[in-house]
Image (tube, rainbow, N blue to C red; front, side):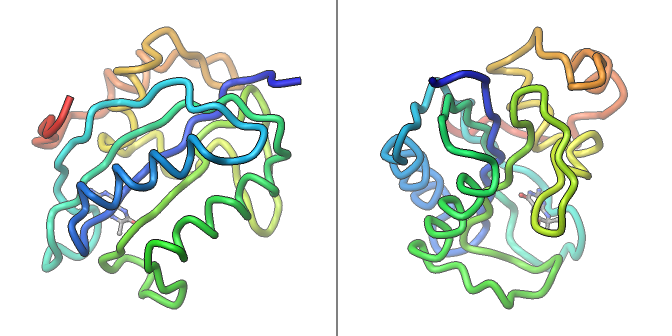
Amino acid sequence: MITESVYIGLGANLNDPVAQLKSALKSLQSLPDTQLVSHSSLYSSKPLGPQEQPEYVNAVAELRTELAPLSLLDALQVIEQEQGRVRKEERWGPRTLDLDIILFGKQIISCERLTVPHYHFHAREFVLYPLNQIAPALRLPDGTPLATLISQVPDNGLTELIP
Ligand SMILES: CC1(C)Nc2nc(N)[nH]c(=O)c2N=C1O
């Protein structure tokens, strides 16, 4: 049974990032036992980390899925690899496509491969603002309203590219 909302962070800053995200959104729609419910606009954002890399294009998508968290993670990594991501990229370096599980319903997951809620998203305007666009009333598993997080994180020049 398709149950909870799952939120995916999309990011790219190499090889035509807008096209990378548009292609990734199509692939998310085609995942087995999964619906793409909605997605945010595409935004341009300053790189978090080393500044000598291109600006990023970011978005957030909402899925409904029957897949278990690690099965979804496997499927996301296949999409990343299909779009040319090389896993041995430096940790904070540029990338063709990042697909991160930000939230998986109200689940709190902590295993070697997966931490949910995503461990850094609370401080990332390029995740919080697109998430707020599609789920303004969202509360985190611990009950914290998304609105509270947004009030603590400046937009850092985040710019809407494509509605
Ligand atoms: C290198 C690092 C942390 N910086 C980023 N910076 C921005 N703006 N957007 C990202 O998606 C992103 N992804 C990353 O992995």
